[in-house]
Length: 132
Image 1 (cartoon, rainbow, N blue to C red):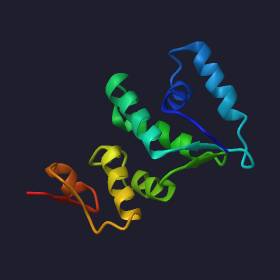
Image 2: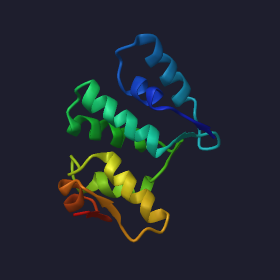
Image 3: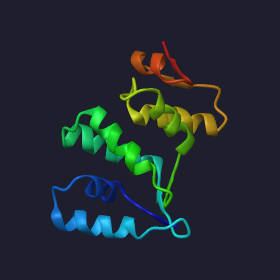
């Protein structure tokens, strides 16, 4: 298994740099179930942020790209089950992906809740509670 950074994901999904897109495609398409790529939650959250905020892709389009990307058998993704459930519920999650991943991380660590000052996140993300 070999890890990948957010910029590899972005270059794979976006063809704005022909050379890097080709290299990312060559690399990722060469992965197999015996030698998969590993995508951490941090790299995924950063890639989503870049695609949506920096490159101005609408979140619905980002989610569509992610669904296709995450379907690969040659990719091991942190929080696969949680992401599959989240992405099957709605075309656009109600909070930032990073907020979901923060709550999932806390739950895996045994936290009974993850506290936030963000009211929208507290309402939308299971395991997040408002600190007020």
